[in-house]
Length: 176
Ligand SMILES: [Fe+2]
Image 1 (cartoon, protein in one colour):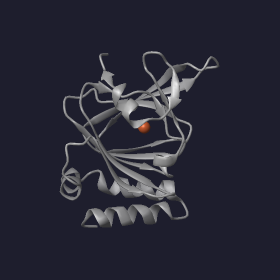
Image 2: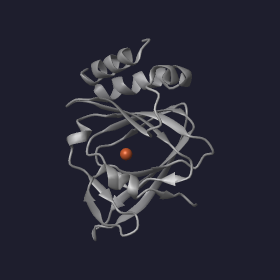
Image 3: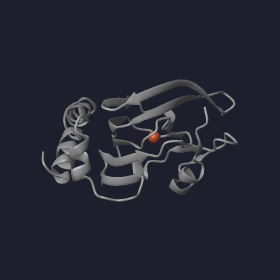
Image 4: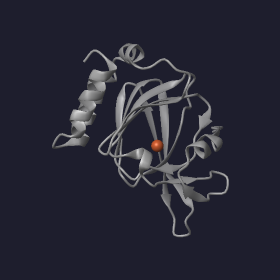
């Protein structure tokens, strides 16, 4: 693999294989130890999120997280594989209680290079407690753009249909 096209093509082939979760995880395990290679092949932009590919089987985002910011809880309604290749990122995991409110039940700290998986029903919020920008490739095993999914207002705990502008609007400082 030399170019972004090569990486996307290899990712799509992995998503169409007999065991997509395993194949996509293996592909990321091979690449997360090469942060310079990702810097070379990824588009140069100031955007925090870059959509690299979207189809029924696979959505690929390149996502960077600014230190100090916590994004609101949300679901994906499909399995997720994340390849962390620079910095550290924390996932806070929530369970929905009978009254509909979220309760944080787990904290997972990822430090690059590593690969993480999230099950279909996971509700999480992501943040960067480190000093430097974190960078990761996110594989969503489905059409994330058109998938109805949920977003929670972190102040009111109110759930709503996921909305990208609201997602960024609800980002807040991650004071511990
Ligand atoms: Fe997410």
